Length: 430
Image (cartoon, helix red, strand yellow):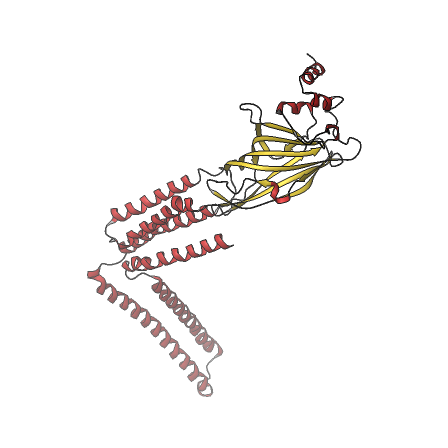
């Protein structure tokens, strides 16, 4: 059957009022064709926002889209509107509205297609649809999970430019409803607003309506799921500071276990995020800090144990101290003897210069005496520099390896607390 035949058969079963409206009506021509653009007012009712995916960077929402325009060809006598079956929309001209960033959309059709057509006596047409759509949303995950995201829903005309069709929100920011009772899994809705714009393409300028909504992620789930366990692992790694350095298996077991557990926790925290994501997220920074402290606790024991092996025990501590004192005295004696020898050479030089008239030494003898004193002076300076270097090394040297654990018991917790204060201050308030 031809298309004209199907339309004619459909018109035959319509009520007389509708048949009168459809007589001579051409659905392929927009209202006011050749007499200026037709204005289309729109409003939205958000039924639900089902999912917001960081992996795919999109959200899925079910919306009621309502469009209003005036078609003078559909004016009729009376004071009541006509509600028609949604399937009669095929007989009327309707705007070619589409969702710009939609990845996939579908019109609900249970039990019938969820469309509504209502015609008012002045020719105003109300066209409503129930749509579920998955829309792309560009997300900045730098502060994840303390991030705020702004997503949009953009409506455009596909074929009619601004000379043919003009879009506008029927009630401004109040044109979008249903958000007050909306419940989201990980987000809270902070704000929403609407705007009107034009889409510029190679083929012309097209009308565009934009609905913006701002989302704030709820952090409580991540505190319980990631932040508290990772902080507990850091505190657990500090237990090794109170275990004797001679208990090698116990301290190694705590260090290795906490490192492996932290590694597993870091891998689990990234399962819900894009694999090829170039963002360094806030949660990655915190997990990296915790891993550094845990690994540092393991390295601390390795250093302390190494110093224990290369230091004398308590029974020989006094002998070790005496030996170090004798070495220092010996070095002092060497420097003192060299210094006294240099002093005697200088006095001899002065005496020779005073006795110049009596003995008249030859120039070659005086030159040899001066040259012999110069290497001694340089040697004295080198020994003094070496002595200072040795003193600096002795200051950095750990005299008692057990002091390493004592210092770590204080420095590790204080450093962790300070870094936490900086971390939370930066990501929550900046």
